[in-house]
Image (tube, rainbow, N blue to C red):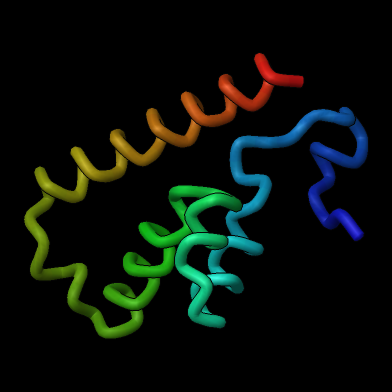
Length: 86
């Protein structure tokens, strides 16, 4: 079952489609499948762990900004490629 409302109503994948599945695959130890499902799943999982351990506060603001912008750029580039291949 597809829980993504964008995909359900618009019949196109959203930029985050596959992130949850990617993280679940990673937690099960299936790294290749995780990356194949959504390449940014590993990045999201690492960031969540850092936030939970409160280690993200040790990363400089500038680095966090660059990582955030890079994440969004890669997210939308991947989405654009998905839409082109539909």
